[in-house]
Length: 341
Ligand code: UFG
Image 1 (cartoon, rainbow, N blue to C red):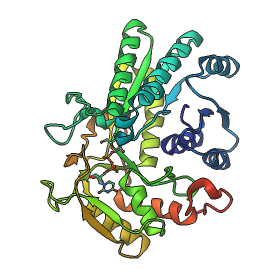
Image 2: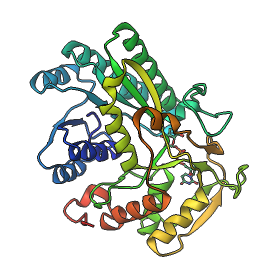
Image 3: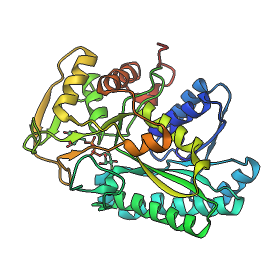
Image 4: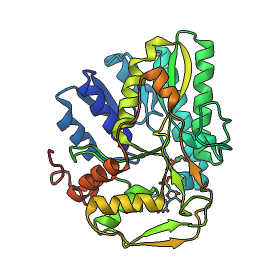
């Protein structure tokens, strides 16, 4: 598993190990913390091996897979902030595309042909109709989304050339929430880009108020609507995708979403209920590049993987708050965090 110390990687590692898989995780901690690795070890029952490694270092990756052969790869490692990708596009192409090229060539060399790839609904750009199905046209609108789209195309071409390859790209919508243990959660560096970790930091007193980016969208309350999906549901989706790889060769693309939209105001209300006080907010200008609404049609995941999200926005807020209040400064205080529930 690449990016094993990240938000979705750490949760997926725990999910896989609970189902009996052994996981070899790698991460270079570019946007994650060793504290997350320590927490995964605590939840992993001895099934977790971790190696600090940069995927662009193909020699070390090759050597790792020689020493520690694997049946399949789950590839999360990437940069993922839309705004930042506009500022430093080359870093995005290097980290996301170049690293994927390196990973795939090492897999070819070592005879590993099964892969679950972490893709993104941002590939759809401004979709014409909601909810979004996988056959909607790809219209990425920023470098980040383009890197994900390029990686998908690279994987499709590799599958074309090597018909025994089995690859699933999971395009997920807005991951949120945290592990119910309170040990794992989202710990962004600096000011959070995403709305839920921002609200969580308002709730714990690290930020004064939420800035709502526009309330003049053509939605019922005027604020943007997204398909928030619990990170544990995403983790389960990865496990099922991994376990289903043997059912088909070639490259498959599958959405992971709930099919339900939630506005920024509704999310704030739900988080206020979870933390027991009304959280302050202020409406500011729209954020450039934002769209009014993004909601998945998740029916293909149900059909092909037997997967369906079972956790709602109230669960996401409860679990995110549980992580945040026990880890007010994220993984910086690893010895303070976590409660067993
Ligand atoms: N929002 C606010 N205030 C904030 C942050 C966000 O009002 O401080 C609003 C946004 O305007 C939007 C909603 O909250 O309406 C969600 O914004 P996020 O930044 O949390 O999520 P995005 O949908 O913009 O982006 C996410 C991921 C990307 C991914 C994209 C796919 O961060 O990596 O989904 O659409 F590409």
